[in-house]
Every structure is written in structure tokens, then in C-alpha cells.
Length: 136
Image (cartoon, rainbow, N blue to C red; front, side):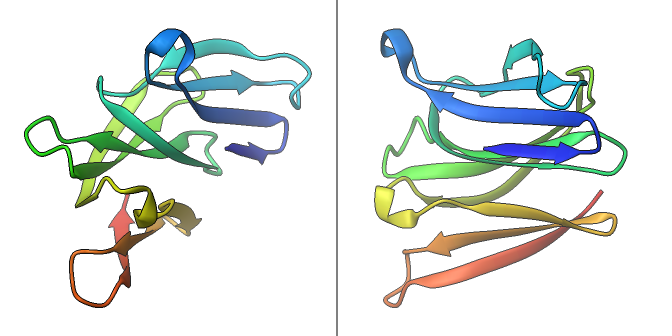
């Protein structure tokens, strides 16, 4: 996933290279000509399904699913905010959801000083799209 604001570009991605699942984040201050500061940002059991949004103050929000170690059929939707220097600003534990691929790809989008999060709920009889607004 990629996001940009003026000359700031941020990339977040899931990788399973060398049989190790990771979510990574990297920044560019020159419109994507070069990237620096590649960070591993997951919590050790990422499933991927990464999304990113860059805020006007150049901080970034990255979301992904992290597997529940006690119940592998469940996952947590995690969002972390980072400064453009790669420093963790805040972590949001948004929701518990199915780890199934059918649960889709949660989406994040900024709205003023808030963040709108949308994800699929497969736990009820009828699948639903759930949303939450997080104040920063």
C-alpha cells in the first residue's frame, strides 16, 4: 500500500520472505526517488492485509491483521501511527475479526482529525461491513 502528501511518500507491505511473515514500512522525502528507514512494524504474527494513509502533518497510519495466538481463527485489526522519522506515535487495537481470507482487506481513510476504519464482520449469520471513527 502506498500513500503520499506533497514530497512525502510512505510504503507499507506484507512479506513472507524466508518463511517469516512481516509488515514493513518505508519512507521517502523526495517524491519516491529514494526510500530510507525500512522498519518492521508488526507484533510477531501478521497476516497481512495492509493499508496506509498519510496525514497532513506527514505522520502515517498503517493497518494490518495480526493473528490471535490462542485462537488461530481470529485476528486483531491493528493500526499504528508513525512519525515521518519512523517513531511510533500511537497504537490502536481496533477490532477482533475472523482471520479467514474471506474477511477481506480492512480499509483506513483520514477525515479531518479523525480516522475512518472499515472491515468485514463474518461472525453473524449475514456478513456485515463495520466501521469505526477513531479520534487522533
